Length: 217
Image 1 (cartoon, helix red, strand yellow):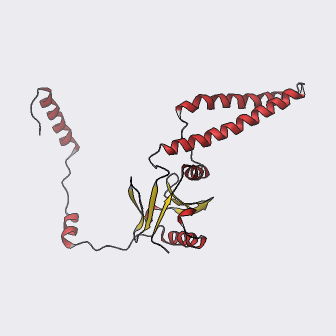
Image 2 (tube, one colour):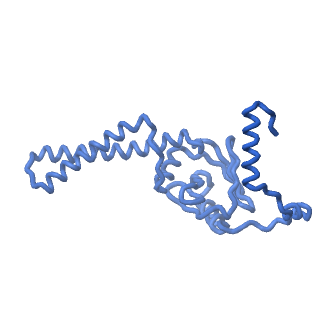
Image 3 (cartoon, helix red, strand yellow):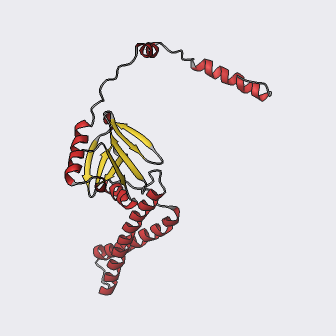
């Protein structure tokens, strides 16, 4: 199996992975009035149908059909707006979907690098690895995850080998690294930590000196 994989995750693939995990991004401001109106129409239509059902009212069949049709259309448009908002948010997010990335498997963990980032995650940082749709998700916690599209792998066999390799390494600390004696001695030395009262007193004195335009350390 290769030690590194290059891929480009499109906003659509990332949004599908986000939605699959049950995560939601806030609607852009310019979409919020329309989403509010859709919700009013949706609840109004189904409220109308509910009032007729529980109130035993007699209304023309066309009115019932129109209310059901309006509610269904509003629900579908609302779902589309939610999905579209996620895609728009991801295009403007720091993840920068659409950027070419390189995933490298190292002894201590996984390194993700691109023209805008260089992030290292140790194996102990991962919670699980899952496959959904056309994406392999390396889960860090309930919210954060690293998606890898199927297109990053040359074959299904390589993808399955990758998933098995990651699953076997997850949660395991890397091999212990020997620390030179000089550095170990420095790490063991107690460090002087100033007391809170001393720090507060010093800050107060500095503030007084600054108020009179005097130099401070």
